[in-house]
Length: 175
Ligand SMILES: [Zn+2]
Image 1: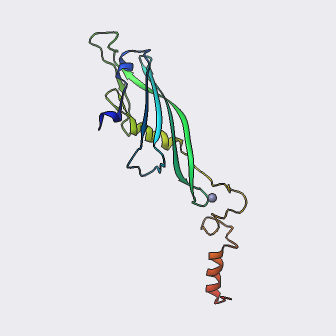
Image 2 (image 1 turned 60 degrees about the vertical axis):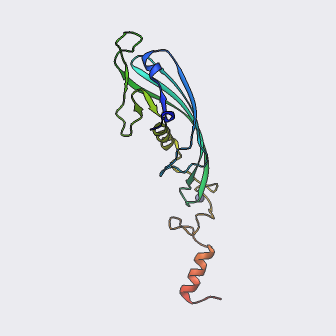
Image 3 (image 1 turned 135 degrees about the vertical axis):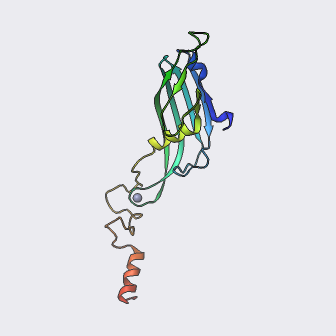
């Protein structure tokens, strides 16, 4: 893991009340679940209460998703904020010379390496949580959707040229 892929929050963890801020851009390469057309621009502010590390994040990017009705590709702008809390164990070093506080998480995907946030894992998780679940193209659910015509999911297949041709082939009427 490259050093720039980690956001080192240790100084905040060892000094409750001290706020650390980062801004970054990441292309999030090697994505299977996310189709991003722009790098993710993000900012992270972190401050510890002693028992909790509070992380406030803003992320902005553009992704391509599929219309839930017709499967047409849609570009969606994503711009959102997240507020996360992570448990901290141990005595911060600012309170005791031999103290060392540590972020503890039990996430299935590791988000911290020691007290550094694993930036791309965190960004990826945030995007997956905030991407629209049922995006729709401009035709919405009501009315004829030219994109949806012809898909197996759609009942309104009348008048679709490709299907009309297929019907003609089946009946032998190609006039
Ligand atoms: Zn659609």
